[in-house]
Amino acid sequence: MLNKNRFKYLLQFGGLLGAGLLFFFWQDIVDYFYRPAAFDERFQETIERRVAAGRYGQVDSLLIWHDGQMVTELYFNGYEADQLHSVYSITKSITSLGIGIAVEQDRFPPLSTPIGEIFEDYSDGTTADWETITTEQLLTMSGGFRWDEIEGDSFDQLAQSEDWIGSLLTTPLDQPPGTRFNYNTGSTIAAGEILSRSLEQPAAGFIEAELFDPLGITSFTWPEGPNGVSNTGSGLEMRPRDLIKIGRLMLDDGRWQGRQLVTEEWIDLSTQPHRTDNSWPYGYMWWRLADDDRAVRNLAQNDVVFASGYGAQYIFVVPHLDLVVVTTATNTERFDAIFPLLYRYIWPAAQ
Image 1 (cartoon, rainbow, N blue to C red):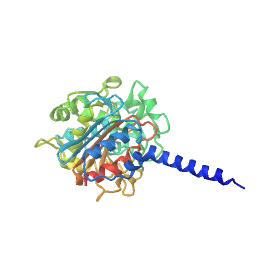
Image 2: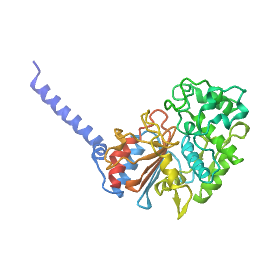
Image 3: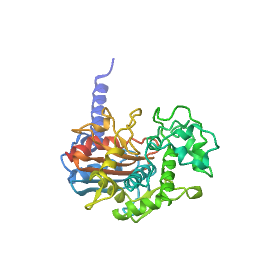
Image 4: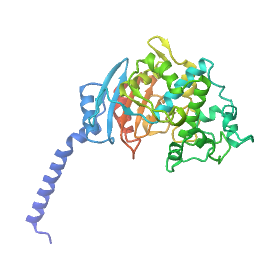
């Protein structure tokens, strides 16, 4: 039978331990249940504290544009405002904007064009399976290639080759073009090469002149691949502030300071969910969120459009909230670790 004194001491010890744990985690508990109503000082302090504590992985920057002004600009892990950050596959979404500009200028083939008509120099004289893939199917990653860059090494093999386009086009198809979505950076690089060939100049240079220059984006790096191929799949390094500009352009339907840089029609077309056979619906190199995704919690409507890059690089655009959210990060294991920050704090603050 337990001694009464020992029982009393155990209760006291347990109470002290509980009180100590409550004291130690009290701020974290308060922050967890806090639901902001504005981007005020408490919001800034809470977000900065939780991000610095690693609650959302290793976030390197967080910038928020709301109602016509920058309401949050935070940097972590030694990063500074003018420092470039690799944005990986956000490059794809920016390439989509460049293609949209070229379409308006009648300098990009119709989206129904079979790519065999464009890459004739890769044809062996027979009708290979890849020749029937359309430019639109490249934009929606539904070309049918046997490809795995999520768990496999398909992209690594392409990146290590001396001919990126040839590496893609010699990859066998394992399904008819247009059958299903399959994430494929090679398809985006091929779409960028189609843009280059149509323009008779590198796609990256065209996008710099037609998009970056009007936006005042002057600090970036965009290395090219073998044979001068523009790396329209993952090559860009940019400043978070300039990613905000891309988001603002999307928010204003392609307009910037009164000038229509990208047509409203292309903004709408490229952000439609052309492929829904994936956890995130996909447009022309822009993503959407499914209606049952946890990230749309606390939203009156699901109009979220976003660009996404490896390691949790994001540009989120939420038109009905007049909101743009940019993150750069080094979350190589959990790309969605940032999402609770959105639906628990940022969405409510923007209502």
